[in-house]
Amino acid sequence: MGYEGQYIRFAKSYNQHEERDRLSGPTFRILPGLDPSLQDLTMSMLKMASYYSALEMFVDVQSREEFGAVNHALCASVRKFLQDYLVMIAQLETQFLTNDTFTLHVLNIHILPTNQMMAQLHSLALELLKRNALLDDDDEESSDSGDDFENILETLREGGDLGAGNMTGKKICKGGVVLGLITKRLEAMSGDPAARALLTSL
Image 1: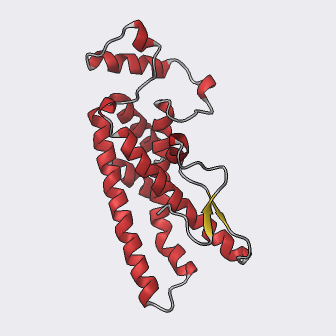
Image 2: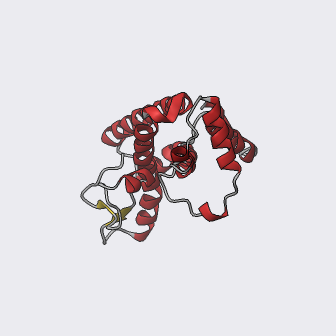
């Protein structure tokens, strides 16, 4: 769920008071002494905790009024997935407390499908956040002017102000641009039925 524990701590590079770090999701470190095979297994499962924390922050940010109705609808769908995730965590905790044969390997098998789903949602969230300039974009310099053109058209459709201040201001990815982004990801994930089902449900 993205919290620190006795043996699992946030990485020193992670600052939970910085919005950008919280939007990217926390990175974790395991205290020395754990068996290497168990450490590898644990680190792979901890990615899901990072995804959950990042998506929770994404929903908080993208639900703001200025991001529009399409982003709000997307956040509502993501919020439902996060609620289902918490239900799964509660069920797994019950298994851990009541089943003596419940091990880390069994836990890993149970969470694999959810881990893949969360990874897809996290990837989509990061792309939207980069479009909104809330996260640094590694490919920012190589991006063409097509996105700017789409943003201008979207602003015009919504009756927005295209004054000099807004032309040079921070871009907000909303409306048709968000739908177009999801559609492109659907096309890219045509060979992955689980990812397509997830994106279609959004």
